[in-house]
Amino acid sequence: MDNPAALLPSFDTQSSQQIKQTLNPLSLPPTPPPPPPHHHHRISPHYHPSPSRPIYSDRFIPSRSASNFALFDISPASDSPSDGREDASRAYKALLRTALFGPDSEIVPPATPVKGVTGRSFQVSPPSRNIFRYKTETRVSLQSLEPFGFDEELSGGVTHSIPVKPPRKVSRSPYKVLDAPALQDDFYLNLVDWSSHNVLAVGLGNCVYLWNACSSKVTKLCDLGIDDSVCSVGWAQRGTHLAVGTSNGKLQIWDASRCRRVRTMEGHRLRVGALAWSSSLLSSGSRDKSILQRDIRTQEDFVSKMTGHKSEVCGLKWSYDNRELASGGNDNRLFVWNQHSTQPVLKYCEHTAAVKAIAWSPHLHGLLASGGGTADKCIRFWNTTTNTHLSCMDTGSQVCNLAWSKNVNELVSTHGYSQNQIVVWRYPTMSKLATLTGHTYRVLYLAISPDGQTIVTGAGDETLRFWNVFPSPKSQVPAISFFAFLVTLTVKSEHLLLEELRYGEPSKPFLGLLSGRV
Image 1 (cartoon, rainbow, N blue to C red):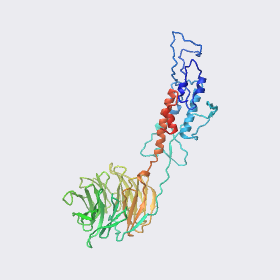
Image 2: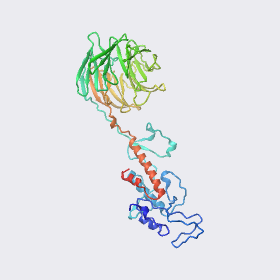
Image 3: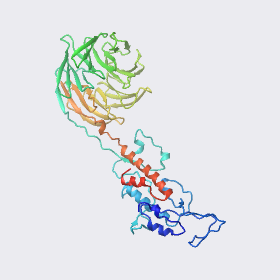
Image 4: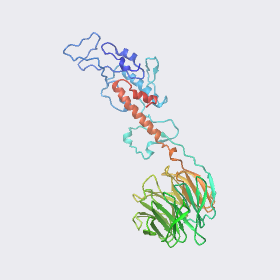
């Protein structure tokens, strides 16, 4: 029947055994009110209380003495069970466990089965504490999950484990290869960049070419002439403006949508090999050892000059919040500057070769990665917030570039002597997801697509290779999500079961939870 509670008459007209036979087997039988402490005899149908005694009406007030709170590690208020109630409670919880976690939920049958109204026997047992132990060959401890913490004192000895997601497969072959004649084999230059509008800019000799990734159309943006050459290119974070650094120490700003030069800025005495945008602020690093801060909204060529490097500046990257600028030089130094400093606020001198490869993490504020050249071959990680050196990974090859994925906590590095490889790393374990080969020269140039899934690499072999290395944001379901769903489901079921134990009948939301409608 729809409402088992409607079948409950007063306890002076029907025995508790008759009530058992009318209830649905999925609901716990109600418990009659316990007699007052001064009653020592059974209440019969012919018993009439005296006027001096309290009169009990036919309102059903359940007793919690038969409730089994061991499932929730709650001590019952009383240790006196009612006849047959505890077995029925175990039968219901066995059905609950089977519905939630399947038939293989480590249930051990008792010596005596309990029969329901249909005549079937329910195999029940004391509730198992390992309710989150899944039958899988590979398990990881909850202690290893980040960013979640784990307190052993609060765990009560319960062992938690979740299935391990298999490693993601990365294609070992490029899906596109483009010829790039006259692409220079120079470690200190930065000749490839990918815009937010999906246009690739490449400096080839004294010209800059644009390749539209949507239409595959190639456009020649500019020609600097035989007396000059392209040393760096850098797209503005938004819009269609492209900065071009030249070997004569000049900086040109081009409107790529119109193929028109907007302005030319001076200030450096030698070639400009590194560029970095921060909104309307453009930073340029030069072989003259200086870094110039330029505001393209003003008339001046530069608004400030930052000095500190003792050799050519070959790496520049602004942090994602545009508050910190990291610079690397041929003096083996890695410096960190703020928006208003003319001297570095942080200095890192652990690298033993030129620092060109620099990447800020988009996932954790202040996390900076840097790579050293041939005599170093290491990727180092820094926390600029606490000014600490976090870790170091020896890659075995010259580190030319670093780029962090914005979709997942992974980064890619490109290398030169002696393996010329591309490596996809998982952070913070720094385990290799893939090693990509194909370039026959040092992989000196790297850019990442605006959707964060594709990288393009350039080398002295005069080729550009496109690789699918990172997943899309939509395809990333955290490994903890299914575990968190089960935790939520169990918390809901425990809450509803407690309500059922208190009031004597399964609530409708709980039955909906079992049927998948909640």
